[in-house]
Image (tube, rainbow, N blue to C red; front, side, top):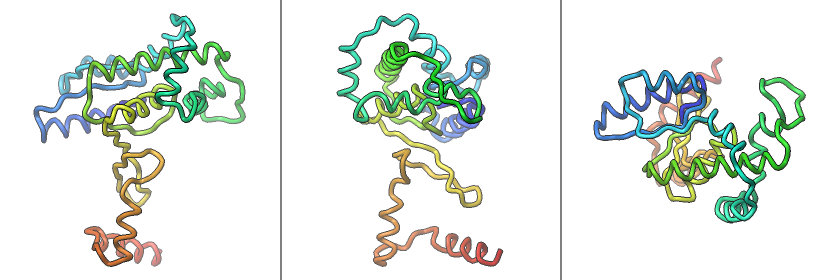
Length: 214
């Protein structure tokens, strides 16, 4: 996921992976058209396939509403229905183009919202079926398209890694679930039972000492 201003960070990660594993191939979900132009002009990574978020937003206007398709989609990836995919998207649901409050007027009517889900699901499904990625690396689930990408990948058994800030110094971590840090509870329980000595325990103890001193 090459999201907005973070696109160059994600691209740099791809370069580093390619350097260590030269046979790795990459596809991308891109947020902005300006980033798409930049990606097509760079020579470091040849992306095998790209979804552009801006194009997904326009695709709804070509869709004929198909409620049967949406029912099947709901059975496939519903949470438990499809409305959370829209509720997550602050632009579609709340008209909040900037991080300012209060905004409460949706940018689309109900029928167009359903068309947006329908169009986005078709694009993401085609993308995953054609690219067949082994894993997806995501920074944030921030709108309709990224939520569709995440949930459809999960449903297909594709590894999903979210890059999370540990909020301790400059540490970051990978989690397979955007709602929590996978594996952390197990490490915690094993540490308490003395069945495991975490390799970063001395660093954690040092951080706590420094935090108390300051």
